[in-house]
Amino acid sequence: MRLRLVAVGVLVGVVVAAAGCARPGPYPSGDIDLIVPAAAGDPTDTVARIVAPCLGDQLATEVVVRNVPGEDGVVGNQALVDAKSDGYTLMISSVSPTAVTPVLAPERVGYSFEDFLFVGVVRSAPVVLFTAADSPVDAAQTLLAAAKGSTPVTVAHRGDDTVEGFTLWLMNYLGETDLDSAPVDSDAEIFQGVVAGDFDAGLATLTPELLSSIESGEVRLLGSGADLRPKYLRQAPTLYQVLDRTGGGLPDLMIDTAVSVPFRISDARYAKLATALEECLRTDDVKRGIGPEFVPLDQIGHGEQWRRYWDLQRGVQLGLNLPKVN
Image (cartoon, rainbow, N blue to C red; front, side, top):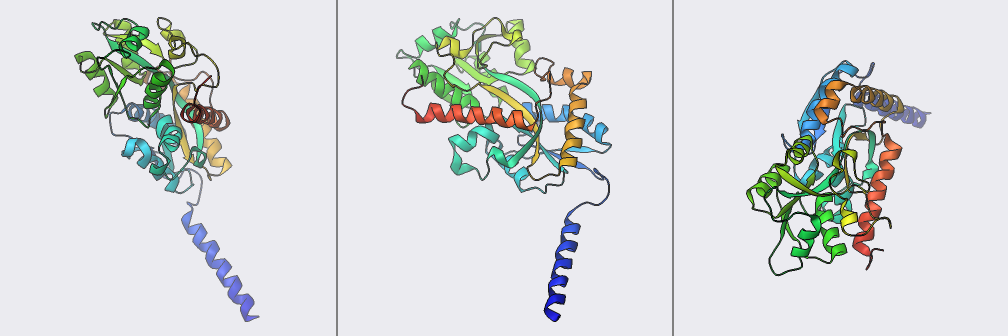
């Protein structure tokens, strides 16, 4: 009998402890943290600060943007994985630290994209290759041809363990070229360095600012990483078209920026967040701030985003592991 009482006491203690970890009452009943795995001013940070006020309005609480930079997004991603699954910690996740770095540099991360539950994609944009308007490089083929010569041809990007870095590797592999890698810390450094002539070309995620510079003629677009040319980039081929390598399981070189939560969140709280985000993506202010071209027309939920990341990882593995990509 005494043993049974002890067991019941232990069970009650566990229940009380578990209750103490959860926030009672309706959800949300307090501020929500929105982790940005990048420094202030980064394109991901910009998206977060556009979406956060609207999410706060929809959820009737304050959504606080919290920058957690470090190791190209790995530190911020790990912070979300380690957070409680109570719906009070979200993250604006970018494809590179979430899905690509775990493949290219598994020793640097303690998570996989399967540890995240994707609430919805807020922004989807291709990797683009561009050069200065006054550059003698008038087309991607010219750049690739120059890279087969004796003079170094440098391409700036955000790091070897990112989608942009993988894109450069894939261009060299498929094009049998030797474009020099020039990793820098920010998209602003890529743009400024290319315009100043410090780099022959740049690989970056397309942003409204970069698109405006392309349309105004400040920089010259050479190619897009998307499988299909987006309507707003009709003036340039895809990189796969340049390399004469379409199809064959190669990854769609798109940067999806999604709102995500720890995987163990309750269905009810996930549904409330998904509904709030969907409403935000319909508002003119949010679409205008992010760039209407980059906001998906239809909500991309967890299952679809999981498949997109899986396809990208499979494509990266294909490029890294096979002796020849067909």
